[in-house]
Image 1: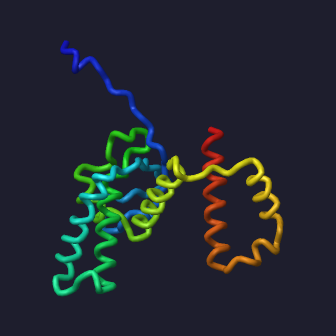
Image 2: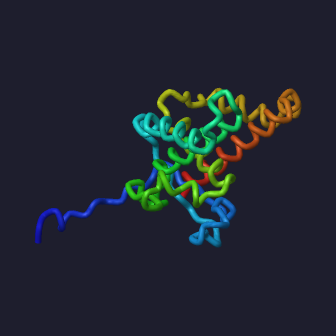
Image 3: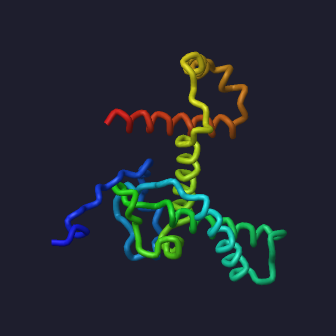
Length: 184
C-alpha cells in the first residue's frame, strides 16, 4: 500500500454553520432540499475577492451590455454576481470546511439559490468576517453589564429609529444563537 493512500485527512469543521430553510434554494433546481439543512461557511481569501471582482464585472456587462456602473441595474447585476462568486468559495459541507457543497460551485451556485438564500449566505459571510476578525473588539465585562442594563431600559430602545431597533434585535438574536451553539 502506498503511503499516500494510507493517510487520511482529518475533517476540519468550518468556522461557521448556517441553517438553510428549503426557501433558500431555487424552486427551479431539482436538487432542492425539502427540509432545513446546515451548510458550512469558511473565510474567503483576498485572492478570491480579487478574482471575483472582474468576474462580476464581466457578468454584469454580459447581462447589460449597454449599461455601466452608473446604472442601478448594472450595479445590481454586479452585486449579485459578486455575491454568487464569493458564496461559491465560502460554502462547504456542514462538517468539513475542505469540501465544497457542490462541484464547480463558484459558477453553479447562483442557479441553485433563491434570492433569499443568496442574501442569507452573504450575511453569514459578512458576519463571519466580523466575529472572526482580530480587528473586531470584544465586549468588556463592564460593557456587558452596561448592555444588560440597557436591554432592560425601555428608553434605550425608544431612542433608536425603528430600523436601528430592528437591526439591534437581529444582532442580539444572532448572539443568542451563537451562545447556544457554544454550549453543545
